[in-house]
Image 1 (cartoon, rainbow, N blue to C red):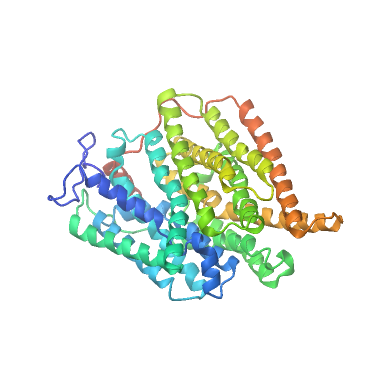
Image 2 (image 1 turned 90 degrees about the horizontal axis):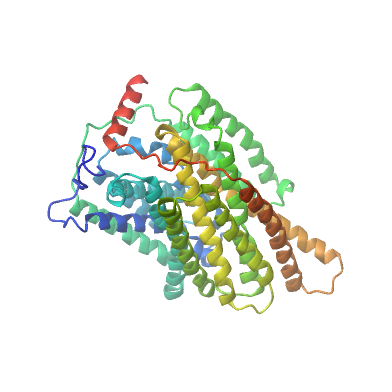
Length: 512
């Protein structure tokens, strides 16, 4: 389905109808993937408007958004099972229709559990649609299936649209004066994609379909439930005053048994959602730690920067939307820099991570010296660009390293394992820690009897936390500078052709 069935042949898209010009066929799928990545269930860019138009709290809206992020993380181990069971036409049509329906339904209910479920489903099928688009044009993007080229280009869309989506949401809210406008627009886009798929493509198979046999659906639900519970704790922690809240204690007591059941199921069935062997690579733990560090540094904008721009400077959503464009430029710059570093200059991988860490540290330092009343928003452009430049380097480079670390059998399981850190869970944990720390600092500063008003006390607390983060980031940067090793080979491993993957899955199903 991605190129010809036989390795080494010219790039083709045999699922396309004959009247579609060959030159624009891959670009159509790029457009589809771009649209899928813009979509979601509830959009964080409309947070204030959703709170104003409904009875939902800020924590409720964030929980709905984060359930969508968790949904994006969970399909990875199942993607190839879907790919070899259904045709490209069936997968894209289903994904577009489901995401479109979820967008519509999110505008007609205020029940938080229902909205969380809809957001999870939308995120799940959003990734399925994106994967199906990008896997079919991978051979067009890199004829040698080189991940050092594929991942930087992929993250231009994935990370880039994480900035473009809230920007576009803010524009729709401003023009149409309603948060539902973004949902209805994305629903229309998804239904247009479904129609285009029906018109432009036909069902094509390069091998017999493999049944959805031995798929660990319960394991997927257990790991999803564990992620949702952890996100719930740190998202609602401040609202329930942490252990003082009865609901918080109940959910906290649910985490250990959920984790136990997930791990025991993984250990005792023949076809687990995540195989135990996927956790046993000796360099996996340091890789997970690196992603956790990135999320820790990357959590300051979600708490400190938002508290500064919204609570102190009183910037509106339309004003701060300009920062999303700066983020988008930073993402594109970082992804292209990774490709240049790895494929053209062929320099050391750890030096690339050090540069990414230095860029993220530059954000913290610049923000530390920028926190002051009456600041112009233009002063935030450079630090925001530095942060996203560094984030793009880390996400792209470490994903390339993961592909080099793990064989193909475990690679997509590894993406889900990393997703527990980078897709909502650790992000929410770090944000909760910063929120708690900021509240304690504000209370402590007020108890000191300083002759400051609440706005000035808030500025002092924000500046203090930026300073602490600068110290942490500096220590981590020194570690990277001292770590003078090359963890990946000069020649990157390449993904096998789809017919080879199909035979691997067929043999695995036969053994089970």
